[in-house]
Amino acid sequence: PLSKADEVAISDTFTSRVDMINVTTIRSLDINNNKRLTSFVSALQTVTGALKISANGIGLGLEVELPNLIWANELAIANVTTFDVPSLRVVNGSARFDSNFFESFIAPNLTHTEKGDISFVGNGALTNLSFPVLTELGGGLLIANNTELEEIDAFPKLRKVGGAVKLRGSFKEYVPPPSPKNLTKHSILQPTDFRVQCRLPLPGGRPRRLRRLFDRGHPQGLRQAERAGPG
Image 1: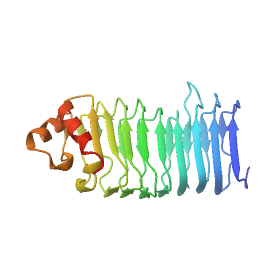
Image 2: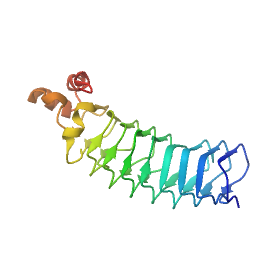
Image 3: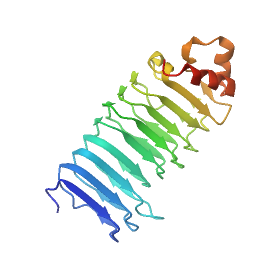
């Protein structure tokens, strides 16, 4: 087993399982282009640089289990079927999940990001997102083109967002956090399904008619929201 390392890269191998990385702290870990890799399990607790996983288990699916991961500087996760981080509390920078195959993502203990974004883009099987204790995003939030995700109600305790909130796709309902006043001036909703129901007030306290258009995903209402800008 690997018990001490600063940087680890696992690339272009024929291995089907990686479970021998027993370091608790690492600066960077990059796992990519391992076509037969279907399982990655580690006792890793802290990533001071970046954890990157992409293009593994092509046609097979990669399951990632990091039960002890508590703190990470950057996460860039793509093409996995599961990403299990039940102990993760803080992401210092950004956490990006693009083109994955998981149906559900849950971060039960993540409380905040210090300065980065959280993004979910192009995860075609995703139906459920849950961040039950997330209170603050140092950066922005991007949820886009997750075709099976119909309802966004993942952030019940979110109070502060440092960047933009951008939601794009065929979702039918967005349930905002209890204090949407902290979010509205940065929010741009671009639903492609005009049946969307959004209970988020239109940025800038726009008139009721435009607010109704915004709630229905009408282009005029969305343009008014975009013009409101970051204020």
